[in-house]
Image (cartoon, rainbow, N blue to C red; front, side, top):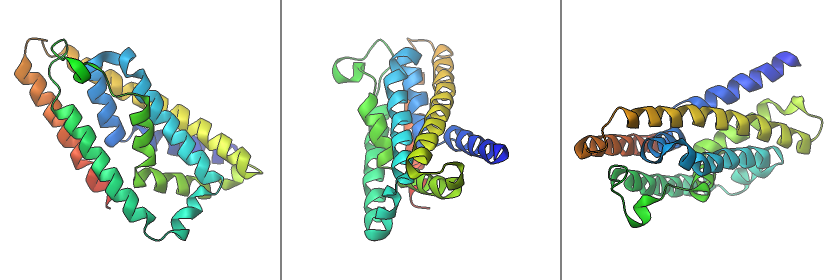
Length: 200
């Protein structure tokens, strides 16, 4: 059983640290706003993943079988949401020069919705609940276990990506506006590219 639990830990870490929409968004936030101001976003993403996987373990994943077109709807909604996030990142200016709504980082709610609107997240949640079901005696215990493991793994992985964003920001002078524009547009483009994963 300990080896099975080790497999769960490995799967959770690999799944959460691999590049994707959430990691790109957190990297951009770290570069623009620093680590501390990115904590609400990271918390929202981690909580979204934990709650989604917990819900799947409790049986919510079966809803995708009851509603045939739900997966297509999730893909469309997720794609539109990712495009909106990419647009938000791509139009940001250099730190210290933003005003109004651009001066605030993306918050907890947006991070939380990122997972629930992501069919890739649903697929991972359902497969995890099915693959590691024997680690717990009841659905509630399994939901709690998976939510904790994936929530903590996401928090760790996102922290690393956010720190990478902070490091990127430190390598660019605040007055080098064109470099910030290139960085922001590049991160936005990577987020748009991650939409392809929603349709695979």
